[in-house]
Image 1 (cartoon, rainbow, N blue to C red):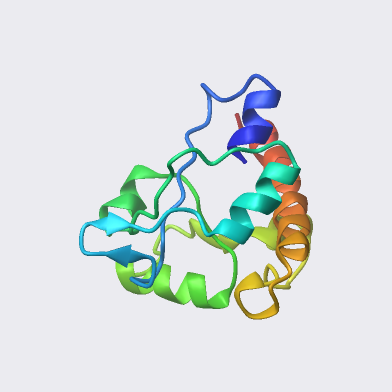
Image 2 (cartoon, rainbow, N blue to C red):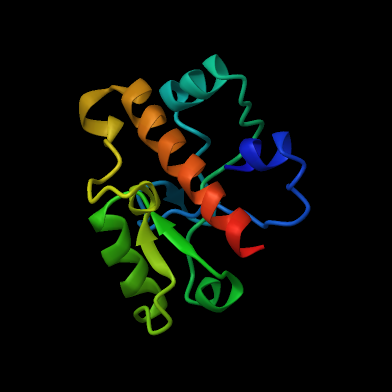
Length: 135
């Protein structure tokens, strides 16, 4: 999403952050770096991760952001648990913006980071159209 915004000259108008919804990627106060197969798939599309590390979602994030996007139903459940619910209706799954009720394919189980990338790209393109209508 950050790459799409940057390419369209909108990076300074929309704040994007990525947060873990579980503690699996956080060790103490330090998050894990981007998983190597995910990093490789992003690099195939010209997107570099640098030294990005996982950051845990917090209850304060609910007030800090206009939207909270999950990749799947488990993300949404975790997000609601962490933030104390979704009273303002800010949470949804990414592919809902593309008119789909499916979850993003989870590459952790299939090792198909190409399919996950395709789903995320499609969802981000649709989300970007939504954002452009609401800027």
